[in-house]
Image (cartoon, rainbow, N blue to C red; front, side, top):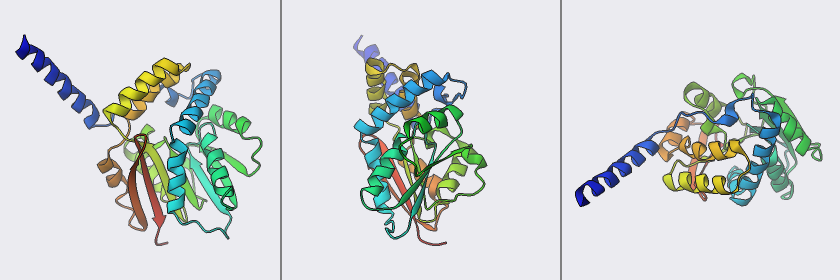
Length: 249
């Protein structure tokens, strides 16, 4: 009994290691643009809470400060995959409180997400909106390009295109995304099951972690961009902060 019990335990460990050795390709429910608008709204509200209280916004703030942004210039910041607009508001407040002049531009392919974001950002006249897939964005007209919890939705050529959009920022870019790790996976799985009212979040939150990145994967993705000072740092809670400060035109 002892031998077989130990064998089963070792087999479970092996399967767990294999599960996290590569990015999951299972689809998130939120990637379906046919999700009812009301269900999406609930999900976006809960994501705003998570970003605010689990330190997600703070990771992006740290990234902005790495870029050495000029205060004399009015900055145009493009948020790729803006979702519900909560990150745009957080970035805008962070920068304006430090006396930067900022125009925020939200880009999202989901029409319902843009609608929701506009309704939540009515008090921010310096916000602009683009309803368009990032793959079809003709030009990156921004000083800084930012993406938070967005890159893990993509693979292959789409992910490479996203990297090129980020690298198109005139001053630099900030990528804030998930570290694929078993502790993060099981923690968010339990928390979402206990506290979330959104079936989208309960399904997608742990899956997002499984679709997250290793350090080596992110380094390889941005290796081609030699015109940037690339820095990659692990942040609590299980986030990667990758920044690229432009060093050449």
